[in-house]
Length: 443
Image 1 (tube, helix red, strand yellow):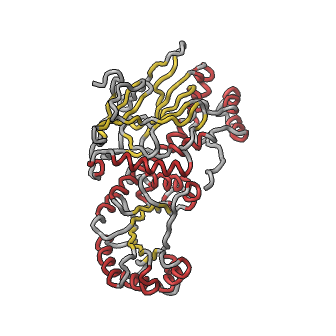
Image 2 (tube, rainbow, N blue to C red):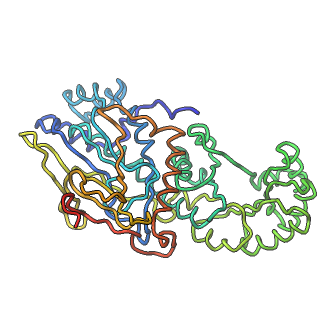
Image 3 (cartoon, rainbow, N blue to C red):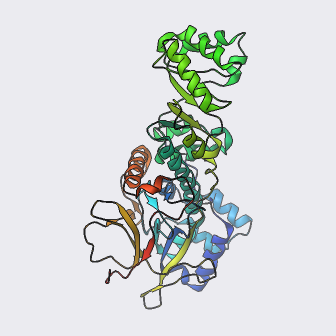
């Protein structure tokens, strides 16, 4: 596995953050100890839960959040900031603390999925980078979770690279695995994060050969019998018969990419069985989403390949997360809660704790949030916050391949603790409520 590009992440940001930086350096407020929180005020319409993803990418990118000479020259030459601000940025390294939900954790309205503590200046300039990663990756993981739940025990494979930006494709592949997918077609994602990669063939592969049988023969002879053959370039029945004729009973799988997939899957399964290919799997593709996957539940399908709808969030391309200042020190060094009060965009001031309230059977009942430190934990509640960055140093285990594996497991365990109706695809309210509580009075 290799790391992502060594390109600094510091200009993955908006101009206005450096405007605020320069003005607060002038006023002196830049150095005030501050606390920012990333959260979503609401879930996408009708969604019952969200799945956090992108935290590992944020933390890895934080290591590269530095300003090199070329970037500083650009900021100076274009008059984005003044000399004082350039001097500050030249020595920038985040020195604070970051807490948050584990990647793969489910979240609800106002869940403080990431808490950033440091000076106002160093927290402020991270805003756009944090939100761009979390909003994209969380949207994909949340869609992937709905799709993987609809698929049940059948595999889902991410195949959306051709339907999004090349960098987004890598991130989407990573997020899809966190959300329950078993593999991706994106090789860079496999290389970078150690993900399983799979691939079949396109219709062009069949069309470039003189016959479908010639195409299948070439693929079987070069790739082996356990490969997957695309059988619907011409006639599906003829394609299946040709595939079996060439590969025999050890053919790994056939792929269906058009037509009425439910009807086709039934008679293709019967045809394969009649031809002696009882172990040949059936994979379906073609603009699938969670609803289409659910409709195929009764069909004899073994795997789903999902592209466009997955990498665009299946109707919710962003998680709508925001990043808000919730607390800052006054002139005496005492922390004061602060909050935005604008209609429809209110936030809740104060540095939060977060607990998942569970009943005696381990089933989640509420998201408990409050200001300060929780007390009176009855033993069933689960603390949701982890310490990712300690005084500017990244804690072990939250980035790289192992972090993706852990996040996928966290997703599985978090979903398992939700009430059963969390798995319903019909629009509904969040499956558990978000409750703001007094930490000293749980009653």
